[in-house]
Length: 124
Image (cartoon, rainbow, N blue to C red; front, side, top):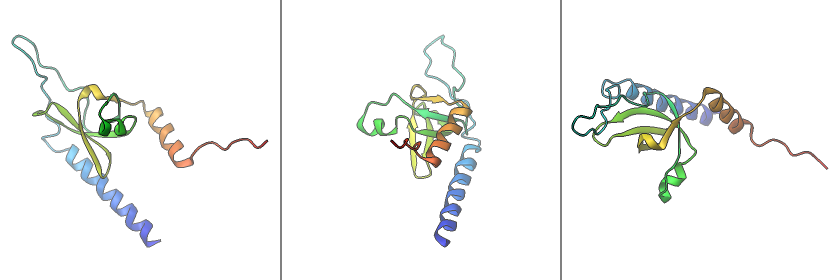
């Protein structure tokens, strides 16, 4: 029982770190797209604490992240990427072209499926 309590405590602490980092002034700064002469800068496509799905990565390491759900923590203007946490231990810096927002119903459905597991198979 003590192990479960410490696991829940560490998850809560990790969540609090992500939230406090996402709400820092640096993370709320507006990213500026690489714009040539006479081309207007764009606003961010994703905001801190927004749930996203990773997709379209082709490298061996990247393919492992495809399909994962994560939380945008902040925009990194120097690399023009978003810091996305897919778990408390896993952080990826991804281009906006490789993340997409998720409908809240899709997030809930995936969460329930992960908790419940696969549907039982009918007995013959």
